[in-house]
Length: 411
Image 1 (spheres, rainbow, N blue to C red):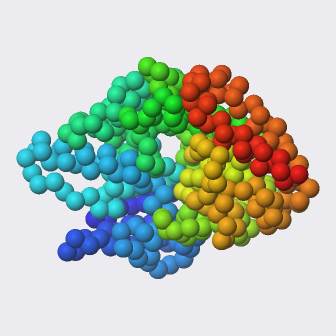
Image 2: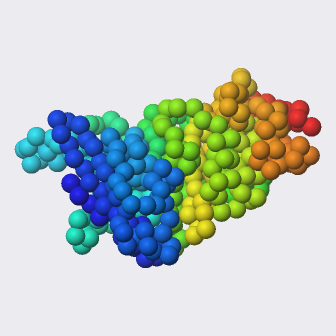
Image 3: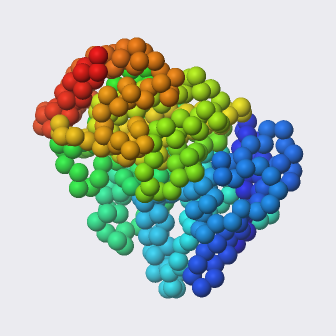
């Protein structure tokens, strides 16, 4: 299989190279090479750190070493949808189910909702892959999408075509979909799991964290919470879109040239910002503030795919924060991405010790932690204002109280 690859820069789709897939004896290999015209383009940039601009070919087993493409691939939820769709289609057509390899997954997601600014086309460049004729659902269709997501978990033979169109391009394990609001703005809708109890209310607690982060001076995407038959659905603006324009995006994992499942440190993200960031004076302190906040609320799922960077023409800028979730309980918690290389504890004291690497002085760090502790005091009022049940608030109480105490102990 051969595909033309374009990247959108300032609203213009610019041909940047070609991707080739070869499958032999069930093993997939892929190659990518930049187009010579792209290499001479005045606004050309490397799609990711391990695909530097220049002639030659990049080789990979699957797409593992072509990380720029991995970032616009579906994660567990979207992959399951695509495989389910293929299984159902094969049954309808009375044929053998195809094995979907990595490049097939890349080409199978909705072109309109694919993350970032990369677009995948047929070899002649006439058709974007995959073109979705049904279009992206509107916000009024949320109840039907939530029902479809629930059914997809319960019934392996359920028709998931509406979810493939809406949600297959997005990363993460939880059910989600791309939708458009009444103005046509592209949003991410994050759904509760079918088995989730009212006391868990994960989407609502993520929204609470986003509101608290904003009050702490951390950049977050616009978000709001809606409830469908008492269940929380979180709506988030897509920060890789500016109106109809696509913005180049890479994950934090791609930034450090890392692999899923391995352990990394915020210090590695800091090094990337120093070397390739468009504004280290702004983004290094911002990254540190997010790390300190994660310690305070027990955001233990802070792996590097939950950090991102946007290309702004002069370098990579830290994207708004996303996927920040508190963890119940006052027990010792451990971060997926550690503040220091060998200390994964979610402890603000470690954040204080390493603050200098992020261009944050000790006095600034202590002042910020005092401010954060004060902001976090409002968590119960915010939670109740968002309609979170008293049982859920009680379940999360010891986590927030212990986090506030840990922040106060640093000063």
